[in-house]
Amino acid sequence: MINLNNIQTFYFVGIGGIGMSALARYFKLMKKDVFGYDKTPSTLTSALISEGIPISFIDEVLEIPKEIVPNHSTIVVYTPAIPKQNRILSHLILKDYLVVKRASLLGELTKNAFCLAVAGTHGKTTTSAILGHLLAECKMPVTAFLGGVAENYNSNLIFKGSEIIVVEADEFDRSFLQLKPDIACVTSMDADHLDIYGNASSIERAFTDFSELIENKNNFLLKKGLALKGKTVAVEESADFEAQNVRIENGGYLFDLKTPTIILRDLQFYLPGHHNLFNAVTALGMAILAGSPTDCLPEALLSFKGVQRRFTYKIKTADLVLIDDYAHHPTEIDALFQAVSEMYVEDRKLIVFQPHLFSRTRDFVEGFARSLSQFDEILLLDIYPAREEPLDGITSLWLLNHITNENKKLVSKSELADALTSSNCRIKLLVGAGDIGVEVSNLTKILQDEA
Image 1 (cartoon, rainbow, N blue to C red):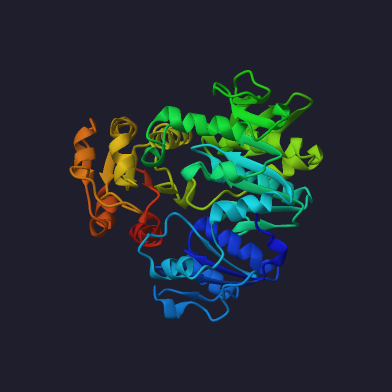
Image 2 (spheres, rainbow, N blue to C red):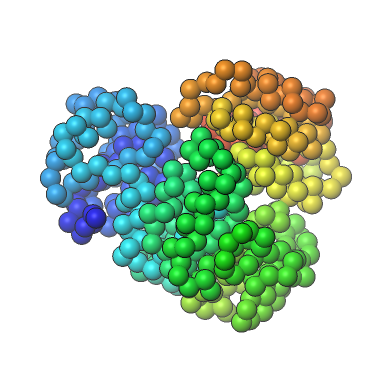
């Protein structure tokens, strides 16, 4: 048990991570002394430094700030992404500093506020961002910790008060079991993180354990069809919370929201894809359960601009549409294909995909092959390893050979610009959870200059 009231100094090891940086921002706003280390500078770390958080990028004990001392008012926070051989973290553990995982710190925060937790193997970030935005626009005292940068705030933190907390309930490493939610949802429950769980039934048991954290099942929302107990959510399918009368107008959705108590008509939402419409229905349901005034919800939903790298339009002209997306699982790629096919029925579609993790590529190779084969052209980058070492025989070439669509090619990052400009597909998508996101700005500029 950590008494956060006694903690004044925070040191984040791996501060550039999307979840870590949101916490760092929060404690800085709470007038705490915040410091950090990360391996590599990034847009996020630059933003944190500009907000007054000192960050070092050298993994040496001498780089530890003098303010980080082993006493009751200092805490060190890290993530499982930090390698075991990290010198700074190894030293801090050896010298008996108070060292906790990010999930533990987030769990402690949820014990002291009214917590809305968004779980699911897909859709967490978008659903959390919509939910945080709805509550903020409806003048609720909310802090939302997001796994992506919300376009409305240009931040992964929404801070409008501390009585209500919105968190992404991350299934990785069973982190979500440390939360204390008052209202929660599960948006999806596909097999993933099999390097941690081993098999699909193990991850399903973890989600069942998570659902049991909510005693009142009226406050637990779940995608219709999941083997959990709670209130169901669906799009144009009978459910407790349902999007009805869905139609496309002016490039967005117009729909009615049916809930157990009310119907809100003619809501407008401008993120493409039924998966995003489902996320919006889930967020609306949770906002209503949290006591949000319903009269402000339509305008709040309409004003939501999205999350960076979640179906983000980089170019949108008569000749070219360039979309950036974080999808890294076959189900997410299927959802992406549904969205672009619905919005751009007649146009040819090219996908650039960077596989994320050797283990995920191995475990879902057939699913990836089917999902990617739906596109008219496929460009495949090398696998982004993240926290993993290479696995024998698991390469992008191996995945490429499983793809049945013959219009496919393995490319390097240096070849991407030429491959994109030479393609006659109007719709081009840059997809993956690795460092492909770093390439997006440069590729966008090249394609704009070519137009």
